[in-house]
Image (cartoon, rainbow, N blue to C red; front, side, top):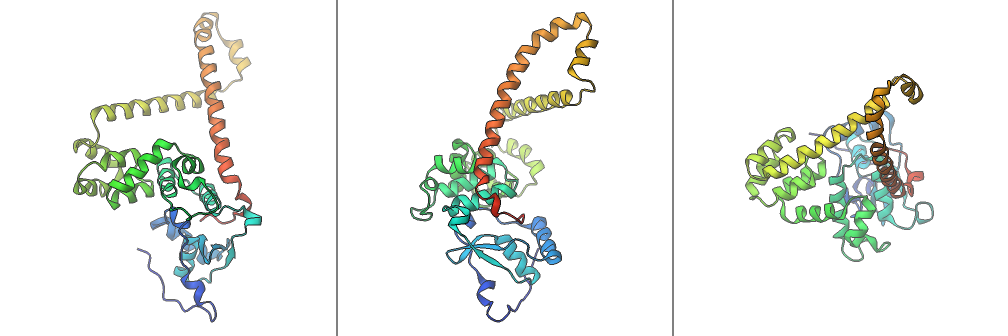
Length: 294
């Protein structure tokens, strides 16, 4: 457990050591455990590289840097959110920074999007998208169905389950199914090590056999596709060398499967590039303002 040192702020800096977190910053989970320890070590060794962003007198981005400064007795530095330099939407700004530097999985992004969709009117006066599931799902680059499930998890699951999804150790799909169980069952499974959860959830009736079978089948597809891509990537010869060395008897089966494989890969590549493009559009707006990792 990380404990805060008792620090005396420099004269005139008392306010800097007791800054509040902005509600938009609190949409994203805080670092805990090893990740926070690593950040503290970095701040202790290198000082605070990226200043902390303020908006309306509160911390908009940099809560973890701020905490690390408090723990390591390093004086924090601040800069104000500037609409001219970073766009006029603080929600899009803080979202893009977090997506740029954090490896949030789709379930974590869905949980953030569900918070944005639940913002009270006026909580983010700079955007109309932040109060709808469609807008928040687009902002976080996650499906609307996932945001709906995340909203249901927030409403029906116990805090321990919500915390596991936000930490990235439980999927929003699993949490949604688990939220229909009793609070005691939910807490018991949330406290179970992640690698043992699936078996325990199946034994508790949270996962039906159909769900388990479908999940295994989908994972099988993914591994099969990945294995095929790796095999092609690792080919030791060029396509021309392969064709030159190919015996005539292998031509018919190659021809039979080649057209379907090329069509599949072409469509997959187009969809994949579109997904990457959507990711880039989400995060590019604030890339110029980003320096430090947390």
